[in-house]
Length: 214
View 1: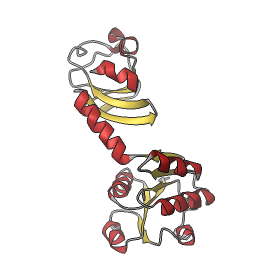
View 2: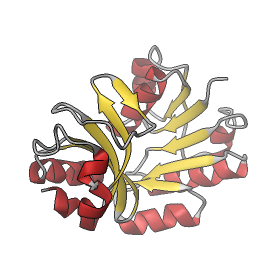
View 3: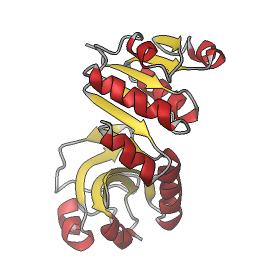
View 4: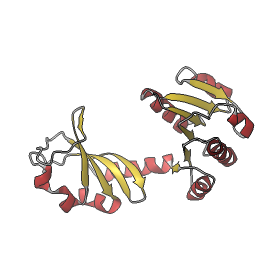
């Protein structure tokens, strides 16, 4: 059964999330107060609705009862975001993620019921900085403060050696959770597998351990 999501706020972040979810086969309900925005995205999502996002009754009527998760992407509208988070949790939505633009806003969202808060602009800046600092750095996803999952290219000196031989956990304080060769992703890591020059590693790493990858 397809998972269903509701995205409130269709700025750049909300639209990107909605499109990404659709591309993965999910059902997406897009909600925004601007009718023009809804018209533009209506053909790209399962359903698109224009409502007054500051009206809790209007939010209840869009049909969140059977939604698996709600994404609140209205970072510029604190009141609308808070109301939507509270209404979604009141209706029993299992998971609510909200976009915030400051630590203070994030604290408010978490206090009123958000399960996770993201900082798109801040995260984009951190990602750009890490790509500049680490030549083999491709992607990074923060799990919690000081801990994340990263995708890195195999360093030249690692090629031709096995994970076991390199002993990455001891020497770099990183845990390899998957190896990617071309389009093939092996989630069961073979410690004796010889790494290729174009191999990519999916690793779990802390910020302090990241410095060892320079």
